[in-house]
Length: 435
Image (cartoon, rainbow, N blue to C red; front, side):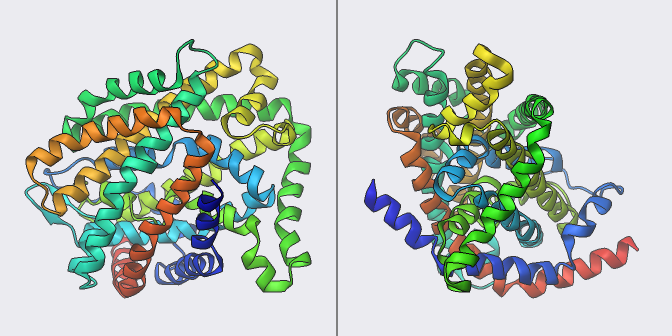
């Protein structure tokens, strides 16, 4: 466990934090401050569409399904435990910059996608076709295939087991195996069946979680101002006591905020462009806007809601960690029903994440030229990974997901820097047409 923690903080050291922040700043300028105009453009009539891919809404739900997962509940609780309330502030900073990053990822995914015969896009495609870096593209694709087994399956299987163990009298491993087997028919149906299932699951689980979380905040409304003040004041502590800028960059508060932000909204990680690159939307920028809004919903709405629930109820100081901390917070209004609500919510979140990441892994395997036999066996591997991880503590797996996120992010960020000029040109033409 100690060596995993050391590797995690090595990968998420000052260099990674600076690289992600600098990429977000660069792309904010290249995308003409997309954070400020994306919602207004989203409400305007949509662009023309092809008929050979999934719909933009299905792409959005598949991508949100991959992002809205254990990171929004246990990940936020873990960030508070490791980095304190200040980690939430830096999570939001990462999200603000990440809106431009994910916008740019999706623009490039649609611009450089290929049709084989269905559309296929993502970092592996724009790294090879756009940036001229086929070797780096293969590195990304291989990392994504492996991450789908870890981040997308193992962490979710462990989360399901941890959430359902208090309410289901079965061993953890058997719980994870049972839920995973139910997913196999969907996973074996390919990308379009996964997208259709995500389009049903994601809206239901998002609305229900926000409704109950909002209820908790209403009952603790008097504590919200102090919770927000604590988030801001704790975020500034590394700057005051850690030796200026060096202390700020090396503080675990910053590291955990950025790492959990990336784990939650996946901006810069390169996973979401795979779903959106498979959509039938013709306009790269119109699809990119969905990515910017997606980051906002995931982090600035869902993750911030979770953080405020944990802070206003005092659950973050209970000594618990992960889902146990989140359950104690919701128990302040739900009482004995809290484990049931968290358990059901986690199952929905985890299932949608497994579906989303399976989509990513299968797309990368197709791009790598995998044989049909391997494509058929891969969903079985996803199920086995989720089932076996039911016996592994979730806290350890959350550290592994941070490592996985870093391995996928590095090649993708290189591609974004290389192709940032293309993002600027596409955005300029898009806004000119809209005006």
